[in-house]
Length: 280
Ligand code: NAP
Figure 1 (tube, rainbow, N blue to C red):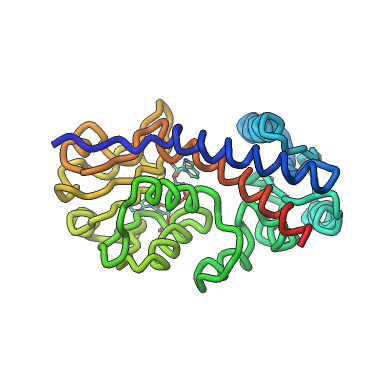
Figure 2: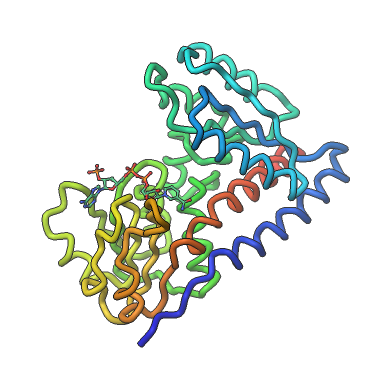
């Protein structure tokens, strides 16, 4: 058996097309385009390139960018003041704080300065709690992208045993909550898990969100399981041993071209949704 490849690039392309159409309709109605504010502290080359990519992709899909660039020496209070200004600005619909921020900054405090209605990256405590309670909110983009991918491929989640490896606040934890919200039976594995292989062997759905190349061995995958590999390691290597897993899984997300393209597509979709909500 060779797994069906879950084509994240194609699903993301479709979502971006829908988002661009909604952005256009919003612009006609509101007399301005939806606006995503990006906040970058310092000059880390990877962060600068991520922000540039998000701004370019926004422009391509009819979304304006508001660029806020702050020096490396910015304090927590200064960053909070900048973000609070964006939270209060009616011309700004969504706020993205590029992270990690320099170490002198209290990142959590900075995230919490984002008004929940503008938290299109899903990083605030409000958004995480609402995700857990299954209440309307923005979701962290990669987890939301994963669930949208599974929906696109009509993967049934109710009653399925899902194993999530990783519990970070932006990825592992919220993706488990979203799967729980779909009535999957969810197990989290993390660095303290002692029987990772045994846990993965029981999973109908595996979500790998660790950041360790090929940590999840292909032979651990239960035949017929659905495998989502969110890991992205240097050299385009995922967290799953893809070459072996593809022979056992029924569906698998490739690396690259699986989960990755969904993240930015969800960010833009949530920005347009925030803009629409601002009109009431
Ligand atoms: P992170 O904050 O470093 O979290 C990693 C998680 O993996 C932690 O919960 C950690 O456990 C767990 N872990 C580490 N070693 C482990 C082991 N040996 N066994 C089991 N669990 C282990 O990373 P992240 O931000 O969630 O990102 C994870 C991966 O996803 C990275 O490769 C990243 O590049 C990728 N990612 C991709 C996208 C995308 O758009 N495609 C977006 C975000 C992240 P503890 O909690 O116990 O430390």
